[in-house]
Length: 500
Image (cartoon, rainbow, N blue to C red; front, side, top):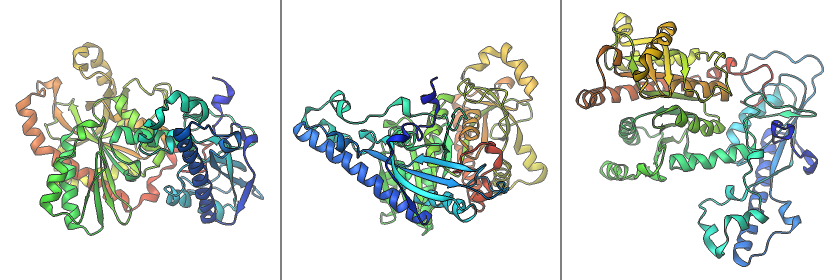
């Protein structure tokens, strides 16, 4: 890997950046970032329109306008950096910190949350300018239909307009592989990496990336979706704080529809057109909930969390099925993952197997309290229903056929359940600094003769899925009451970018 690829893209080609302007406040900085972004994006859209209309390519001067805005913070303390118990919006040492920004108007609340403490507590100097990174043209064309006009093909457009480049899209900062000279990364993800994932989210989930809420449930079975939609429709009628529900295909169900009309519209959604369909309950006061049916397997789990992470959610929780490994477990019991045996084989290079994936205490407590609240169980009854322990995540759905190989590892690890996604979701949360948790429901016990057969499975699904989903929602509500403390310092390194 060459040095240019290792360095954060925000730092490459800095000599090409334009002059920087000092901002007197975080709000003013974001206003200026928004102006610069809109100027660059509009210049790019207009140039593409002209090219499609008459084949006229942009001049060098025009192409120089197709740039992301850049944010630069300078921190020069008079003495040692004061310790701060907060997990984010803090400096590890003096220096200059930079990143490029996309969609600053959409990320305004997040940017304010990060910048205000850095200015008020650390006295950081904020500067804004035009960065060196070009905006790829697919990121400013919302539908893509425009590109079919004029007979232009991708090769012709790529000849004259910036395109997504893998040389400028990577997770080197998150993975601790960056090197720096005169400036450091301000955020885990710069503009090209963020834009790449925003478009991937639209592709996989079937809904506008702006609809993704900061509290995310991930599941591996569509029946959870039916329960989520049913719950969402109830909330739309009962809770005035719920603005709308947005479903795959950007189908909007608002408060003006009657219950019957809303039900018919929800049931008609063609969710099967999308690989990992997402469903969003959007509130007027902000803290909505999204459910993503990620399907089965660690590849899907890594894929979708790679992209959701750029939105900097407060938490993602895995709620799905698992195989119980203990004789004392009963079909329908819950498993609260406290540790993970990683047999998914997908993140071993980014996060070596020797690295522990710690449980997030606040999430663990919320999940346990939510189980008690929804089931009504307490004391010994709760202990019988809810087991805490190690979950094995395997990339082989038929791991049972390798029982002679798996048996010893399961015994040594004291694992209590097996699934195909949980360790991947947790490892991604650890890697990308997103609080995470796992609550699974036992759907079969292959080691004890209770395999998943159609009749028994259907009876289990009818009984258990609604309760399980309500537990996930209840846990999120508990976490929303104190989201600031949820962002744990155990997710941050000693050499961490200031932004959460």
